[in-house]
Image (tube, rainbow, N blue to C red; front, side, top):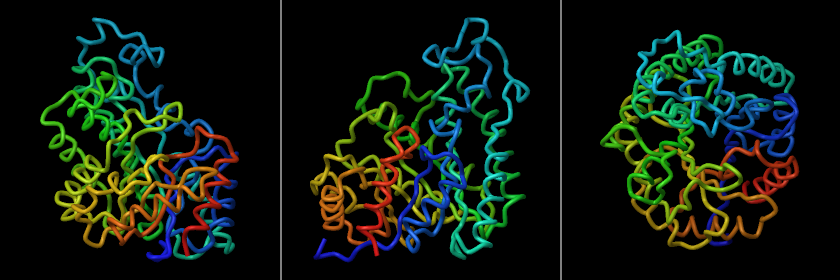
Length: 343
């Protein structure tokens, strides 16, 4: 790390195994008093396992058996309407947590200028994650998208644009790209449209167009953390770079992303993993690398060195994924390492 300057920022990806939003806010700003430009509420309680809390939004008759669903031939043949998809609840959670955020900021606990971050999954991630039948997926995804965008609209109507960051979480999107190139054969990740990359980008364009001017927007590219494992072990950053460049080419004219986050596996401190980042075209969009792993400060520094050797202008560091599925001790360790490797 001596040959490169330390990054100055930390991105908190999303969830944490803490008691409440108040607990997460105060823990984060105490550990990182200068490094945060935005802060989520920790997605505590039922939201700690990413989209699992969205299970009741869908009829049980279209849910995959792995989620204890009961799909049937009749449910596959049905025509679904918006009434079949319940409200997401993301707006209720965000508005309640923002009130706590605002109180802490007004009291000086959260520094002035720090934004409130709301992390939302892409509708594709949710629908592919829960729904069994491909035809039903294609039918209900626009309905769930409408529900999610209604939640987004209410969030933006309730929180000033200058206070708000919207982060789009893209785990199933990355999985679909890896499935297309045969890196995984798990049909859980099988896309139900083609061409895959173009279809994903079309969806991201619609989501970006729904984010108001003045609201900051970022992307969390993700390889998952189910059972503390990736859905596929990335060979390198090629898929991430390809999607990031597509986002920049297609989304930047609509709503320039403030940042893009990419994960780094714990065992990848080699420059080969980062080599595709030579082709990364982010312009003034900040890059955050999820290279901070708990109880591994020395490894974190090695991963950062290897990344900076390929892409020197790294804005900040982060964990690979949300922390809600791990122990509280991991949160303290990661925050401490983040503080150590930044200025």
